[in-house]
Length: 267
Length: 59
Image 1: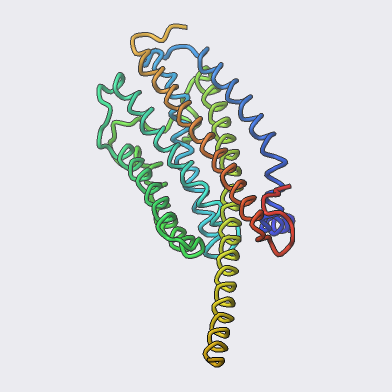
Image 2: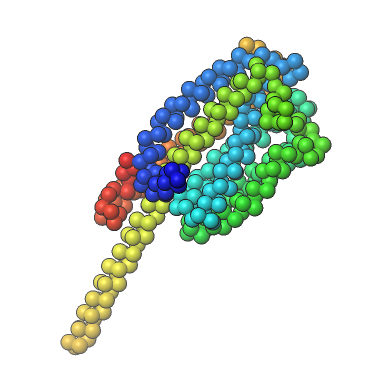
């Protein structure tokens, strides 16, 4: 009941803007503090007996890879909000999340490549995990292109929501690709049956960085949603402005025609 | 803290992540300022919201 009331309250963009104005500075501060702690712990983490210091790349690669999938999950829930509940902020949330998700996916791919070159001897391998994440990145770009291609936000929202839900099938494929196929990419070592296989010296910095990056996403997402609401206000005011200009022109050309007929009549 | 023989790969990873995150932050702040400026510009031309409240006011 309380959740429904909160969601109804947040459906009002003005209330949402007021809320973000209050909480964004706190979120940004908390993100900065956690990132600083995470970076310090990553720097101080010992070398891995196999990977050496290259294990430090994992502290930024893994959070980005998790967020690449998590952001698509957020967009999928937002897509349901658009198609099923018609929540006014659902498509705003989906549209605002796409570029941030694309950035995290890009970083997961590049940091993975930079780890792979010294560890695997190659920057890239067309294995199931890497290929499915590349497909995720291309889907993010496709969604962003779709939002830009359709001028009316509500029409773009429905098309984008359908595409997002279809694309959500890729998320379990990414997650379980390392179990279903024989891949160069190693299997899950944190979220797995039987608990994490990582030593605490690596697990803690990784978890702190994961929480810090998740907070970073929430902060950036709320700020981007605020921008999108303002962009829609600009659009509606511009439409009001355009209709006023049209009305004024029609009125003046109408009175001009009247004058002309008067003049003709006078003639 | 020694980064070993693959220091350049480690440093490049961290620098790249920092650059992309910074770019995202700058882009979002610039976009916010752009939208606020456009709203103020439109309101200055006499077009206002039906509620009478300023569209640029987010509090």
